Image 1 (cartoon, helix red, strand yellow):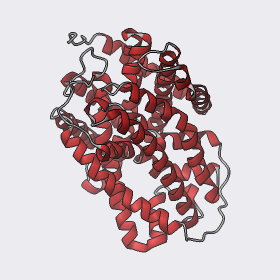
Image 2 (cartoon, helix red, strand yellow):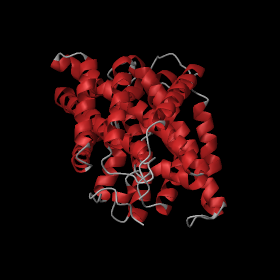
Image 3 (cartoon, one colour):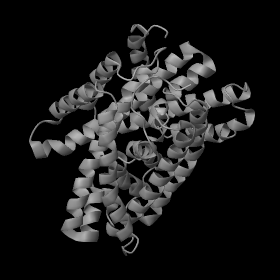
Image 4 (cartoon, helix red, strand yellow):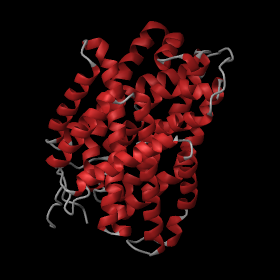
Length: 401
């Protein structure tokens, strides 16, 4: 049964754009130097492909659950069906915290990019963004859907151009010192996360049983291939890639001169703007999904999300927020994988044991990636999750429809 959550019917273009917009964002602009520090030269491109392939079983699990539940809710709904509303509420807090860390990271990155241009401190820009997006979200998804579709196209064009030029470039070998691979894996994981947001508005999608799974897998595969090609181009263009703070604009200048550098600068702004819109539009929906009767416009969820994102983005460093977002999203992946296994083994909601085949592989991947995080990051992520859980527990749930 379709949920009566919103009047907007998202088509395949908007949903694929949501997935690509959710993935292609700040991460690809910060990951290349980190990856180059661990895997010099063009071989670093293989890291993106390896992480994308490793995440494929996770995406397949989301796709199968999306086919079984063509309604709004995503991982919150899956956990509630598998383990009951109380556990589902706990998972809801975790996935909301995960999305909140990511929203704070991209908001901070956008604010740091805009601060020198508008000559306003980054924390002030963060506050304006949080307030503006909260007001836009009160109007529903129509404005956000149009914005993320246009911005997704705008940010993909310069990346495709760089990747195309880089395929024919010749570069000198890098002399960078090898750094631990763990940080590179977490950076690429952050760059590739976002496909999990596609099933969240399934109830507002036309033909969700078919479109949502395809958009989920397609977004991950497309982004992974694009990232590998972009990193290859950066490595060819910049022998000192590991020391570059703005790798992609620098690679654009080396490959195509000032015109391409300008195009990429515009693409950077579009990319960050699109990802900010996407995260601010989707993050409150995780919190809203914890209600018995989810709403399209949920003022308490929108307000609470903005209240948490603003200070995190204002006071947190970008590197810390990126790592915390990566750690938190692994918790979300684990909960969703366990939900699929439970429902499949119990033969519920049209699922059968054979549908759980991606779960062991995906859980192993989650474990390996989680092992790359520091104890401090794990403790901070858990601490924020517990604190938010206490806050959310006092918010009254909506009456049952």
